[in-house]
Length: 119
Image (tube, rainbow, N blue to C red; front, side, top):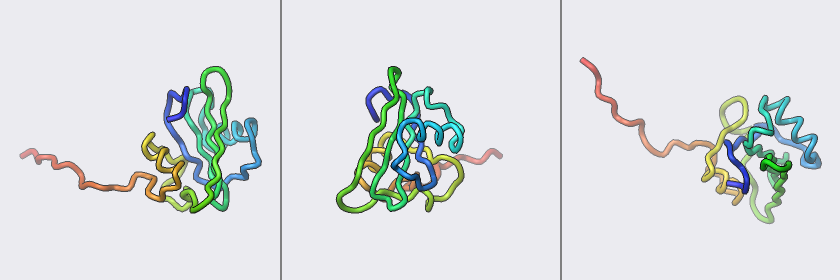
């Protein structure tokens, strides 16, 4: 997780022009994601070529932007993942995402738990 981040982690599902900075990313959070930046959640945006990403969050004292560019490989393309709306990820998945791992986005690794039938 990021320093000061208190909430959940969301990845925007569409490619973003990463020349955008604080105010423009804030606008995407409120209009496209329907969330409030001041809640302490982390919002991740991936560029069209998947070589760069930005994370935006309110740490309680100010707005922070983390920028990362991969020298080798690419980040996931969230727009190719199934689902609508922002993709919520865990802190572990966020760490994998930052490293350029492609296994992000709730890959099912185990079968559903057994539930006894009543009757």
